[in-house]
Image (cartoon, rainbow, N blue to C red; front, side):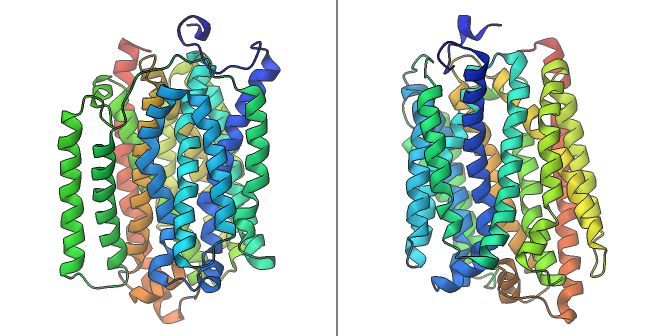
Length: 486
Protein backbone atom coordinates (compact mmCIF):
# COMPACT_ATOMS: atom_id res chain seq x y z
CA UNK A 1 0.00 0.00 0.00
CA UNK A 2 1.59 3.23 -1.10
CA UNK A 3 1.30 6.54 0.69
CA UNK A 4 1.80 8.38 -2.58
CA UNK A 5 -1.22 6.70 -4.15
CA UNK A 6 -3.76 6.78 -1.38
CA UNK A 7 -2.47 8.76 1.55
CA UNK A 8 -0.47 11.79 0.46
CA UNK A 9 1.17 13.23 3.53
CA UNK A 10 3.76 15.58 4.92
CA UNK A 11 6.84 13.98 3.47
CA UNK A 12 9.98 15.96 2.96
CA UNK A 13 10.72 17.60 -0.33
CA UNK A 14 11.76 14.91 -2.73
CA UNK A 15 10.97 11.94 -0.42
CA UNK A 16 14.68 11.15 0.03
CA UNK A 17 15.64 8.99 2.99
CA UNK A 18 17.72 11.64 4.79
CA UNK A 19 14.85 14.14 4.59
CA UNK A 20 12.34 11.56 5.73
CA UNK A 21 14.69 10.78 8.61
CA UNK A 22 14.73 14.47 9.52
CA UNK A 23 10.94 14.50 9.45
CA UNK A 24 10.88 11.61 11.93
CA UNK A 25 13.48 13.41 14.05
CA UNK A 26 11.24 16.47 14.32
CA UNK A 27 8.32 14.31 15.41
CA UNK A 28 10.48 12.52 17.99
CA UNK A 29 11.70 15.85 19.39
CA UNK A 30 8.09 16.97 19.80
CA UNK A 31 7.29 13.85 21.79
CA UNK A 32 10.52 14.30 23.76
CA UNK A 33 9.76 17.80 25.02
CA UNK A 34 6.20 16.77 25.90
CA UNK A 35 7.59 13.83 27.90
CA UNK A 36 10.14 16.05 29.63
CA UNK A 37 7.35 18.16 31.06
CA UNK A 38 5.44 15.18 32.43
CA UNK A 39 8.36 14.21 34.71
CA UNK A 40 10.57 17.24 35.24
CA UNK A 41 7.88 19.32 36.95
CA UNK A 42 7.24 16.60 39.56
CA UNK A 43 10.70 17.07 41.05
CA UNK A 44 10.36 20.86 40.91
CA UNK A 45 7.03 21.00 42.77
CA UNK A 46 8.56 21.66 46.23
CA UNK A 47 10.55 24.66 44.96
CA UNK A 48 7.58 25.99 42.95
CA UNK A 49 5.37 25.65 46.01
CA UNK A 50 7.80 27.49 48.28
CA UNK A 51 8.91 30.15 45.80
CA UNK A 52 5.44 31.19 44.64
CA UNK A 53 3.70 30.50 47.97
CA UNK A 54 1.32 28.05 46.35
CA UNK A 55 -0.97 26.14 48.70
CA UNK A 56 -0.43 22.39 48.96
CA UNK A 57 -3.95 21.76 47.70
CA UNK A 58 -3.34 23.95 44.65
CA UNK A 59 0.19 22.99 43.61
CA UNK A 60 -1.07 19.61 42.37
CA UNK A 61 -2.94 21.43 39.60
CA UNK A 62 0.41 22.47 38.14
CA UNK A 63 0.57 18.87 36.89
CA UNK A 64 -3.08 17.85 36.65
CA UNK A 65 -4.09 21.05 34.84
CA UNK A 66 -1.46 20.41 32.16
CA UNK A 67 -2.66 16.85 31.63
CA UNK A 68 -6.34 17.81 31.72
CA UNK A 69 -5.95 20.38 28.93
CA UNK A 70 -4.11 17.87 26.74
CA UNK A 71 -6.89 15.35 27.41
CA UNK A 72 -9.70 17.74 26.52
CA UNK A 73 -8.23 19.09 23.31
CA UNK A 74 -6.65 15.92 21.90
CA UNK A 75 -9.65 14.83 19.82
CA UNK A 76 -10.43 18.40 18.75
CA UNK A 77 -6.82 19.05 17.77
CA UNK A 78 -6.87 15.98 15.55
CA UNK A 79 -9.98 17.40 13.91
CA UNK A 80 -8.22 20.74 13.38
CA UNK A 81 -5.36 18.84 11.78
CA UNK A 82 -7.77 17.24 9.34
CA UNK A 83 -9.32 20.63 8.59
CA UNK A 84 -6.28 22.91 8.30
CA UNK A 85 -3.36 20.53 7.92
CA UNK A 86 -1.72 18.28 10.46
CA UNK A 87 1.75 19.70 9.94
CA UNK A 88 0.44 23.24 10.33
CA UNK A 89 -1.21 22.32 13.64
CA UNK A 90 1.88 20.40 14.69
CA UNK A 91 4.12 23.41 14.12
CA UNK A 92 1.59 25.66 15.85
CA UNK A 93 1.96 23.35 18.85
CA UNK A 94 5.67 24.19 19.10
CA UNK A 95 4.89 27.91 19.01
CA UNK A 96 2.28 27.67 21.77
CA UNK A 97 4.43 25.31 23.83
CA UNK A 98 7.44 27.65 23.69
CA UNK A 99 5.28 30.65 24.65
CA UNK A 100 3.70 28.67 27.50
CA UNK A 101 7.11 27.53 28.76
CA UNK A 102 8.45 31.08 28.64
CA UNK A 103 5.43 32.33 30.57
CA UNK A 104 5.77 29.55 33.19
CA UNK A 105 9.41 30.52 33.72
CA UNK A 106 8.27 34.09 34.43
CA UNK A 107 5.30 33.15 36.66
CA UNK A 108 4.92 35.23 39.82
CA UNK A 109 2.15 33.60 41.86
CA UNK A 110 -0.21 30.62 42.18
CA UNK A 111 -2.73 31.77 39.59
CA UNK A 112 -0.09 32.64 36.99
CA UNK A 113 1.81 29.33 37.20
CA UNK A 114 -1.36 27.26 36.93
CA UNK A 115 -2.76 29.42 34.13
CA UNK A 116 0.46 29.31 32.14
CA UNK A 117 0.67 25.54 32.60
CA UNK A 118 -2.76 25.33 30.97
CA UNK A 119 -1.38 27.30 28.01
CA UNK A 120 1.62 24.97 27.88
CA UNK A 121 -0.79 22.03 27.90
CA UNK A 122 -2.53 23.49 24.85
CA UNK A 123 0.78 23.44 22.99
CA UNK A 124 1.56 19.94 24.21
CA UNK A 125 -1.85 18.78 23.00
CA UNK A 126 -1.28 20.26 19.55
CA UNK A 127 2.02 18.38 19.34
CA UNK A 128 0.96 15.05 20.86
CA UNK A 129 -2.40 14.66 19.13
CA UNK A 130 -1.00 15.34 15.66
CA UNK A 131 2.26 13.39 16.00
CA UNK A 132 0.65 10.01 15.37
CA UNK A 133 -1.28 11.30 12.37
CA UNK A 134 1.83 12.90 10.86
CA UNK A 135 3.64 9.56 11.14
CA UNK A 136 0.66 7.78 9.54
CA UNK A 137 0.73 10.24 6.65
CA UNK A 138 4.50 10.06 6.23
CA UNK A 139 5.10 6.30 6.44
CA UNK A 140 3.31 3.37 4.77
CA UNK A 141 1.53 0.88 7.08
CA UNK A 142 4.37 -1.66 6.91
CA UNK A 143 6.85 0.93 8.29
CA UNK A 144 4.74 2.72 10.88
CA UNK A 145 5.54 0.35 13.74
CA UNK A 146 9.23 1.14 13.38
CA UNK A 147 8.46 4.88 13.28
CA UNK A 148 6.34 4.60 16.41
CA UNK A 149 9.22 2.68 17.96
CA UNK A 150 11.48 5.67 17.45
CA UNK A 151 8.70 7.77 18.91
CA UNK A 152 9.01 5.58 22.00
CA UNK A 153 12.71 6.49 22.11
CA UNK A 154 11.67 10.14 22.13
CA UNK A 155 9.27 9.54 25.01
CA UNK A 156 11.75 7.55 27.07
CA UNK A 157 14.60 9.96 26.35
CA UNK A 158 12.37 12.86 27.36
CA UNK A 159 11.34 11.06 30.53
CA UNK A 160 15.00 10.39 31.37
CA UNK A 161 15.93 14.01 30.71
CA UNK A 162 12.98 15.17 32.77
CA UNK A 163 13.92 12.98 35.72
CA UNK A 164 17.66 13.75 35.61
CA UNK A 165 17.40 17.44 34.73
CA UNK A 166 14.63 17.88 37.27
CA UNK A 167 16.84 16.48 40.00
CA UNK A 168 19.84 18.58 38.93
CA UNK A 169 17.83 21.78 38.55
CA UNK A 170 16.09 21.37 41.91
CA UNK A 171 19.42 20.62 43.61
CA UNK A 172 21.69 23.22 42.00
CA UNK A 173 19.71 25.95 40.22
CA UNK A 174 16.35 27.70 40.13
CA UNK A 175 13.13 25.81 39.39
CA UNK A 176 12.47 28.31 36.58
CA UNK A 177 15.04 26.49 34.44
CA UNK A 178 12.57 23.58 34.35
CA UNK A 179 10.66 25.73 31.85
CA UNK A 180 13.50 27.79 30.34
CA UNK A 181 15.11 24.68 28.82
CA UNK A 182 12.02 24.08 26.65
CA UNK A 183 12.47 27.38 24.83
CA UNK A 184 15.64 26.66 22.78
CA UNK A 185 14.61 23.03 22.17
CA UNK A 186 11.20 24.09 20.90
CA UNK A 187 12.58 26.85 18.69
CA UNK A 188 15.14 24.54 17.05
CA UNK A 189 12.47 21.87 16.46
CA UNK A 190 10.17 24.48 14.94
CA UNK A 191 12.92 25.72 12.60
CA UNK A 192 13.69 22.19 11.40
CA UNK A 193 9.98 21.37 11.00
CA UNK A 194 9.56 24.50 8.89
CA UNK A 195 12.21 23.25 6.48
CA UNK A 196 11.47 19.52 6.49
CA UNK A 197 7.74 18.88 6.96
CA UNK A 198 5.45 19.65 4.04
CA UNK A 199 1.72 19.26 4.55
CA UNK A 200 0.29 17.46 1.52
CA UNK A 201 -2.64 15.67 3.14
CA UNK A 202 -6.07 16.50 1.69
CA UNK A 203 -8.21 18.83 3.78
CA UNK A 204 -11.35 17.46 5.43
CA UNK A 205 -14.41 19.61 6.05
CA UNK A 206 -15.16 19.14 9.76
CA UNK A 207 -16.80 21.04 12.60
CA UNK A 208 -15.57 21.43 16.17
CA UNK A 209 -17.67 19.78 18.86
CA UNK A 210 -17.78 22.62 21.41
CA UNK A 211 -20.70 21.13 23.36
CA UNK A 212 -18.92 17.81 23.67
CA UNK A 213 -15.67 19.41 24.82
CA UNK A 214 -17.43 21.54 27.45
CA UNK A 215 -19.47 18.68 28.91
CA UNK A 216 -16.45 16.38 29.00
CA UNK A 217 -14.41 19.14 30.65
CA UNK A 218 -17.09 19.68 33.29
CA UNK A 219 -17.41 15.96 33.98
CA UNK A 220 -13.68 15.27 34.29
CA UNK A 221 -13.10 18.40 36.36
CA UNK A 222 -15.89 17.50 38.78
CA UNK A 223 -14.50 14.01 39.37
CA UNK A 224 -10.90 15.21 39.66
CA UNK A 225 -11.81 18.02 42.05
CA UNK A 226 -13.68 15.57 44.28
CA UNK A 227 -10.77 13.11 44.30
CA UNK A 228 -8.15 15.78 45.02
CA UNK A 229 -10.40 17.31 47.69
CA UNK A 230 -10.62 13.92 49.42
CA UNK A 231 -6.85 13.89 49.86
CA UNK A 232 -7.08 16.76 52.35
CA UNK A 233 -10.74 16.86 53.50
CA UNK A 234 -13.31 14.33 54.72
CA UNK A 235 -16.18 13.16 52.51
CA UNK A 236 -18.77 15.91 52.87
CA UNK A 237 -21.65 17.45 50.93
CA UNK A 238 -19.27 19.58 48.82
CA UNK A 239 -17.19 16.60 47.74
CA UNK A 240 -20.30 14.55 47.02
CA UNK A 241 -21.70 17.42 44.98
CA UNK A 242 -18.64 17.54 42.73
CA UNK A 243 -18.59 13.76 42.46
CA UNK A 244 -22.25 13.42 41.49
CA UNK A 245 -22.08 16.47 39.27
CA UNK A 246 -19.05 15.10 37.44
CA UNK A 247 -20.74 11.78 36.78
CA UNK A 248 -23.91 13.54 35.60
CA UNK A 249 -21.95 15.70 33.16
CA UNK A 250 -20.22 12.64 31.73
CA UNK A 251 -23.64 11.10 31.10
CA UNK A 252 -24.68 14.34 29.38
CA UNK A 253 -21.49 14.18 27.33
CA UNK A 254 -22.38 10.70 26.03
CA UNK A 255 -25.90 11.88 25.13
CA UNK A 256 -24.51 14.95 23.36
CA UNK A 257 -22.04 12.84 21.38
CA UNK A 258 -24.79 10.50 20.18
CA UNK A 259 -26.68 13.46 18.69
CA UNK A 260 -23.77 15.33 17.12
CA UNK A 261 -23.23 15.10 13.37
CA UNK A 262 -19.46 15.33 13.99
CA UNK A 263 -18.87 14.34 17.62
CA UNK A 264 -15.69 14.94 19.59
CA UNK A 265 -15.31 11.16 19.92
CA UNK A 266 -16.27 9.57 16.62
CA UNK A 267 -18.35 6.63 17.83
CA UNK A 268 -18.32 5.24 14.29
CA UNK A 269 -14.66 4.32 14.71
CA UNK A 270 -15.64 1.88 17.45
CA UNK A 271 -17.26 -0.27 14.76
CA UNK A 272 -13.78 -1.00 13.39
CA UNK A 273 -13.04 -4.39 15.04
CA UNK A 274 -9.55 -3.61 16.30
CA UNK A 275 -10.20 0.01 17.31
CA UNK A 276 -12.22 -0.51 20.51
CA UNK A 277 -9.81 -2.90 22.26
CA UNK A 278 -6.85 -0.76 21.18
CA UNK A 279 -8.31 2.43 22.66
CA UNK A 280 -9.48 0.71 25.86
CA UNK A 281 -6.11 -0.99 26.27
CA UNK A 282 -4.43 2.43 26.00
CA UNK A 283 -6.73 3.89 28.68
CA UNK A 284 -6.28 0.96 31.08
CA UNK A 285 -2.52 0.88 30.60
CA UNK A 286 -2.29 4.59 31.45
CA UNK A 287 -4.65 4.24 34.42
CA UNK A 288 -2.59 1.35 35.79
CA UNK A 289 0.91 2.66 35.12
CA UNK A 290 1.06 6.46 35.12
CA UNK A 291 0.75 6.66 38.92
CA UNK A 292 3.69 4.27 39.32
CA UNK A 293 6.30 7.00 38.83
CA UNK A 294 4.72 9.22 41.49
CA UNK A 295 4.14 6.41 43.99
CA UNK A 296 7.74 5.26 43.63
CA UNK A 297 9.07 8.79 44.07
CA UNK A 298 6.89 9.16 47.18
CA UNK A 299 8.28 5.86 48.47
CA UNK A 300 11.90 6.79 47.73
CA UNK A 301 11.67 10.31 49.14
CA UNK A 302 9.16 9.73 51.91
CA UNK A 303 10.01 6.25 53.20
CA UNK A 304 13.64 5.79 52.12
CA UNK A 305 14.53 9.49 52.61
CA UNK A 306 16.41 9.91 49.33
CA UNK A 307 17.02 13.31 47.78
CA UNK A 308 15.13 14.13 44.56
CA UNK A 309 18.22 13.61 42.40
CA UNK A 310 19.16 10.30 44.04
CA UNK A 311 15.59 9.04 43.74
CA UNK A 312 15.42 10.02 40.06
CA UNK A 313 18.73 8.39 39.14
CA UNK A 314 17.45 5.00 40.33
CA UNK A 315 14.79 5.15 37.59
CA UNK A 316 17.07 6.17 34.72
CA UNK A 317 18.10 2.60 33.68
CA UNK A 318 14.47 1.72 33.10
CA UNK A 319 13.90 4.60 30.71
CA UNK A 320 17.10 3.78 28.80
CA UNK A 321 16.11 0.12 28.35
CA UNK A 322 12.54 1.09 27.41
CA UNK A 323 13.86 3.37 24.68
CA UNK A 324 15.94 0.53 23.25
CA UNK A 325 13.02 -1.89 23.26
CA UNK A 326 10.63 0.50 21.47
CA UNK A 327 12.04 0.31 17.90
CA UNK A 328 12.47 -3.46 18.16
CA UNK A 329 8.85 -3.90 19.25
CA UNK A 330 7.78 -1.60 16.42
CA UNK A 331 9.54 -3.81 13.88
CA UNK A 332 7.84 -6.89 15.34
CA UNK A 333 4.50 -5.13 15.01
CA UNK A 334 5.26 -4.30 11.37
CA UNK A 335 6.17 -7.89 10.52
CA UNK A 336 3.84 -9.97 12.69
CA UNK A 337 1.10 -7.61 13.78
CA UNK A 338 0.59 -5.56 16.92
CA UNK A 339 -1.25 -8.13 19.06
CA UNK A 340 1.75 -10.12 20.29
CA UNK A 341 4.14 -7.30 21.32
CA UNK A 342 1.33 -5.16 22.77
CA UNK A 343 -0.20 -7.98 24.82
CA UNK A 344 3.13 -9.33 26.03
CA UNK A 345 4.14 -5.77 26.94
CA UNK A 346 1.09 -5.39 29.17
CA UNK A 347 1.84 -8.73 30.81
CA UNK A 348 5.43 -7.71 31.52
CA UNK A 349 4.23 -4.49 33.11
CA UNK A 350 1.92 -6.50 35.36
CA UNK A 351 4.95 -8.49 36.57
CA UNK A 352 6.73 -5.25 37.47
CA UNK A 353 3.68 -4.03 39.38
CA UNK A 354 3.63 -7.25 41.41
CA UNK A 355 7.30 -6.63 42.25
CA UNK A 356 6.50 -3.10 43.44
CA UNK A 357 3.82 -4.53 45.71
CA UNK A 358 6.56 -6.43 47.59
CA UNK A 359 8.55 -3.31 48.51
CA UNK A 360 9.18 -2.84 52.22
CA UNK A 361 10.90 -0.27 54.38
CA UNK A 362 14.29 -2.02 54.03
CA UNK A 363 14.05 -3.58 50.55
CA UNK A 364 17.38 -3.20 48.67
CA UNK A 365 17.04 -0.28 46.29
CA UNK A 366 18.45 -2.29 43.38
CA UNK A 367 15.26 -4.40 43.51
CA UNK A 368 13.14 -1.33 42.77
CA UNK A 369 15.50 -0.23 40.00
CA UNK A 370 15.44 -3.70 38.41
CA UNK A 371 11.64 -3.84 38.60
CA UNK A 372 11.47 -0.46 36.88
CA UNK A 373 13.63 -1.83 34.07
CA UNK A 374 11.20 -4.74 33.68
CA UNK A 375 8.22 -2.40 33.59
CA UNK A 376 9.93 -0.19 31.02
CA UNK A 377 10.55 -3.19 28.77
CA UNK A 378 6.81 -3.84 28.89
CA UNK A 379 5.84 -0.24 28.13
CA UNK A 380 8.46 -0.07 25.36
CA UNK A 381 6.81 -3.09 23.75
CA UNK A 382 3.24 -1.84 24.22
CA UNK A 383 3.25 1.77 23.05
CA UNK A 384 4.60 1.54 19.47
CA UNK A 385 2.61 -1.64 18.82
CA UNK A 386 -0.68 -0.28 20.10
CA UNK A 387 -0.21 3.08 18.38
CA UNK A 388 0.50 1.30 15.11
CA UNK A 389 -2.63 -0.84 15.56
CA UNK A 390 -4.83 2.23 16.02
CA UNK A 391 -3.47 4.06 12.98
CA UNK A 392 -3.62 0.96 10.76
CA UNK A 393 -7.24 0.40 11.78
CA UNK A 394 -8.24 4.03 11.10
CA UNK A 395 -9.87 4.64 7.71
CA UNK A 396 -7.85 6.82 5.30
CA UNK A 397 -8.66 10.48 5.93
CA UNK A 398 -9.40 9.88 9.63
CA UNK A 399 -5.85 9.70 10.93
CA UNK A 400 -6.16 13.02 12.77
CA UNK A 401 -9.36 11.94 14.55
CA UNK A 402 -7.98 8.49 15.39
CA UNK A 403 -4.73 9.94 16.73
CA UNK A 404 -6.69 12.44 18.82
CA UNK A 405 -8.97 9.72 20.21
CA UNK A 406 -5.96 7.60 21.14
CA UNK A 407 -4.43 10.50 23.05
CA UNK A 408 -7.78 11.29 24.69
CA UNK A 409 -8.22 7.75 26.01
CA UNK A 410 -4.62 7.49 27.17
CA UNK A 411 -4.69 10.88 28.85
CA UNK A 412 -7.95 10.19 30.66
CA UNK A 413 -6.21 7.19 32.17
CA UNK A 414 -3.16 9.30 33.06
CA UNK A 415 -5.17 12.04 34.75
CA UNK A 416 -7.17 9.68 36.93
CA UNK A 417 -4.16 7.50 37.67
CA UNK A 418 -2.43 10.57 39.05
CA UNK A 419 -5.39 11.53 41.25
CA UNK A 420 -5.85 7.97 42.47
CA UNK A 421 -2.19 7.80 43.52
CA UNK A 422 -2.62 10.68 45.95
CA UNK A 423 -5.98 9.40 47.17
CA UNK A 424 -4.64 5.92 47.92
CA UNK A 425 -1.54 7.28 49.62
CA UNK A 426 -3.66 9.43 51.94
CA UNK A 427 -5.71 6.46 53.16
CA UNK A 428 -3.46 5.11 55.94
CA UNK A 429 -1.53 8.24 56.93
CA UNK A 430 -2.64 11.82 57.72
CA UNK A 431 -3.91 13.44 54.54
CA UNK A 432 -1.78 16.55 54.93
CA UNK A 433 1.31 14.39 55.41
CA UNK A 434 0.56 12.36 52.27
CA UNK A 435 0.17 15.53 50.24
CA UNK A 436 3.39 17.02 51.60
CA UNK A 437 5.29 13.82 50.78
CA UNK A 438 3.85 13.83 47.28
CA UNK A 439 5.19 17.30 46.52
CA UNK A 440 8.48 16.48 48.25
CA UNK A 441 8.25 18.91 51.17
CA UNK A 442 8.62 16.32 53.94
CA UNK A 443 9.57 12.73 54.74
CA UNK A 444 7.64 10.12 56.67
CA UNK A 445 8.30 9.51 60.35
CA UNK A 446 9.35 5.93 61.05
CA UNK A 447 6.07 5.23 62.84
CA UNK A 448 4.03 5.71 59.66
CA UNK A 449 6.46 4.39 57.03
CA UNK A 450 5.06 0.87 57.30
CA UNK A 451 1.46 2.06 56.99
CA UNK A 452 2.26 4.11 53.90
CA UNK A 453 4.14 1.23 52.29
CA UNK A 454 1.16 -1.06 52.95
CA UNK A 455 -1.16 1.51 51.37
CA UNK A 456 0.80 1.69 48.12
CA UNK A 457 0.84 -2.13 47.97
CA UNK A 458 -2.94 -1.99 47.57
CA UNK A 459 -2.55 0.56 44.77
CA UNK A 460 -0.07 -1.63 42.93
CA UNK A 461 -2.28 -4.72 43.20
CA UNK A 462 -5.24 -2.73 41.87
CA UNK A 463 -3.02 -1.69 38.95
CA UNK A 464 -2.18 -5.35 38.29
CA UNK A 465 -5.89 -6.05 37.81
CA UNK A 466 -6.30 -3.09 35.45
CA UNK A 467 -3.24 -4.13 33.45
CA UNK A 468 -4.57 -7.69 33.23
CA UNK A 469 -7.89 -6.49 31.83
CA UNK A 470 -5.98 -4.37 29.30
CA UNK A 471 -3.95 -7.42 28.24
CA UNK A 472 -7.12 -9.45 27.72
CA UNK A 473 -8.60 -6.68 25.57
CA UNK A 474 -5.37 -6.48 23.58
CA UNK A 475 -5.42 -10.23 22.96
CA UNK A 476 -8.94 -10.08 21.50
CA UNK A 477 -7.54 -8.22 18.48
CA UNK A 478 -5.88 -11.38 17.18
CA UNK A 479 -8.92 -12.87 15.43
CA UNK A 480 -10.22 -9.66 13.74
CA UNK A 481 -6.74 -8.75 12.52
CA UNK A 482 -6.27 -12.18 10.97
CA UNK A 483 -9.65 -11.95 9.29
CA UNK A 484 -9.41 -8.40 7.96
CA UNK A 485 -6.10 -6.70 8.49
CA UNK A 486 -5.75 -3.07 7.54
